[in-house]
Length: 274
View 1 (cartoon, helix red, strand yellow):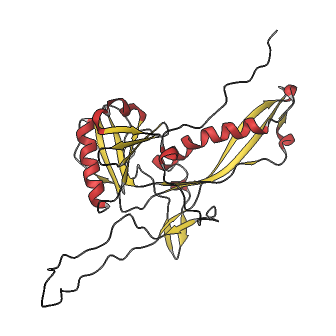
View 2 (cartoon, one colour; view 1 turned 30 degrees about the vertical axis):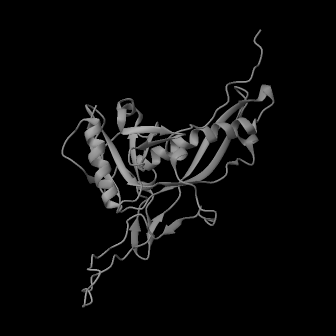
């Protein structure tokens, strides 16, 4: 006879993309139907001029920032509960959904499985959500390189592209064991010697900008800081509609939307020898 005991509770990871993302401003509300913003992580155009000059410096064209857009994907989680043990366990369903959400967000940010098949049109222009593994990413270096050398060159170009602002470096878990002196742990974050954020996430598969599979090499990316937004979890109103009498289970669906956004002026990729 087996006694029913509590399972180890599902819990979200304490590191990775969601844990490392900067806080969302309190004023950001009603984002779930779509986001639009003017990027600031690209830095500003500048002009060097003599401090003591008798003539005005020549004019130069300033940067003209364009708006960036993102349409939040939805995600649903199916959690089966036994009707013999009381049916729907709402708290268990929420825990499982919360624990799995960070993986889903990181995987969608990397490969854009939904975003690439869900285009939207604004003022006659067609957009798709930005993703890491995209041909829009500028490839740094030629062919695979040793990990530290590859990440060093990636970080250098990324901070230059952001005019010295903080950036994020994204890489799959398989590469993390060899980070060595490149990154140090500060609380739940991995930071480089220049205090840029290194994101190692189970949701990152390591594929290339053109879909190159992982083999003897894998890929890492650099972006401006990624902001993550997640809506509250909504449980299905009528779980009784998904009862399977044959096996005495009831399936509960938990749904939410999310957004993982970054300023597109910093989007770089590099290939790393495994």
